[in-house]
Image 1 (tube, rainbow, N blue to C red):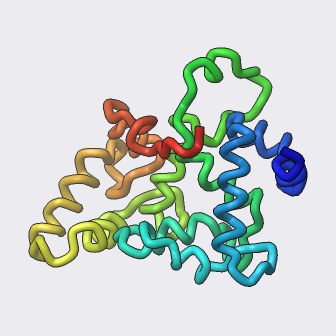
Image 2 (image 1 turned 180 degrees about the vertical axis):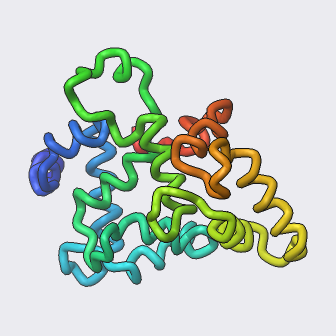
Image 3 (image 1 turned 135 degrees about the vertical axis):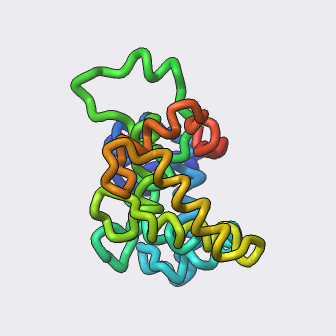
Amino acid sequence: MGSRSSHAARIPDVDSLRRETGSVSQASLRRLYDRFQALDRTGKGYLSRLDLQQIGALAVNPLGDRIIDSFFPDGSLRLDFPGFVRVLAHFRPVDEEDEGNRDPKEPEPLNSRMNKLRFAFQLYDLDRDGKISRHEMLQALRLMVGVQVTEEQLESIADRTVQEADEDGDGAVSFLEFAKSLEKMNIEQKMSIRILK
């Protein structure tokens, strides 16, 4: 029992992390901290892109490199534990009980529907200009379907997808258009990992 409390004490910024991430439980933080330390095989206290590339599920995910990029905003080369938790918090299931009790003065939790959508949007918006162009959509489709579909079919899908979501006619999909096009999708369920309760 003593080792468990000392283990929790080693987790940096526990209280602020719990507030910022939508109250990730102490047990989940402990599991994430253990995972972080296991990925940090050399004990340097941070993770690099190479460390994350060792995760099997990311290695086989067609968007794995883009997901890894999301851990390193602004081109940083090091990922500390709070940054690790912040990114993973987007995948925490939404707790309706917490939603109803949330102080409106507090920032929206990272696992809210809108923040989940923002996270998904940035996987497509490669140049970070706030819009998903036809070219960016085509690149994502190529990654996701590989050689199973012809280039002509991919271009047709990209054109149709952008055209259907593009309400202002600028030939690209803004975040608001992206969010609106997914309003009927259960993003809370599709972007949740149970371990992060």
